[in-house]
Length: 243
Image (cartoon, rainbow, N blue to C red; front, side):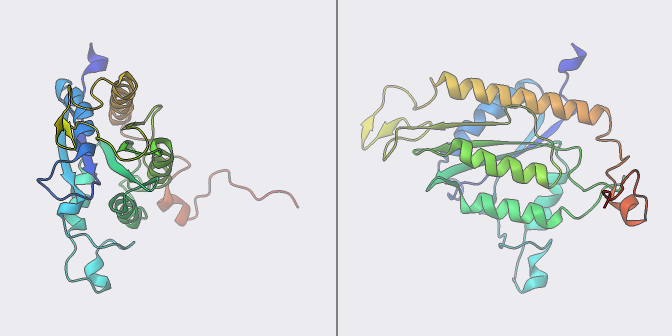
């Protein structure tokens, strides 16, 4: 079916784990479920761990201009702009997304004032979702913050754009673990969670469907949403309320 041809799409998974490569990341393990679905649909994929790069905190495009000695964000931004889909993965710490995920959002925000060839904000026409893992409550809370931030800067968010897995409250094995406290487990933790598997699948296909629609129509029409046109005085049908 032509409607299921996703082969021209590109997806970038940014894992906001606190663990540098090559340490095992449980967030990456769950992101792998979504990635395998996309691979079967012939989507071009890339996954990066933000913590592997020297990216200072801040809300400027290049933090070397703000006193930092090195900033690899401009290269990461190029990879983000090359993708139709951005999937943000994060663990839960104290009920919140990781500090690395917050830094990603801040650096994305730093670029959000740029415009595309239509005069729209630069992330218009791109699609976003998120994957969350942890051993405490917080999947929906983390998803709420990440997805709000993405849509605020211009990403389009489809239905069911988040997925996740959490274990029992308190210390315990994490997603994909095969042993705990020196004891071998019967099966990798979480792999049999129908809730996680269903939501990950639905998220993945909803991202693909929306990204394909936006790609096929060259994003959004720029009538009524062009920053460039607004700055040039084209205010469409805007009127102040009656006094």
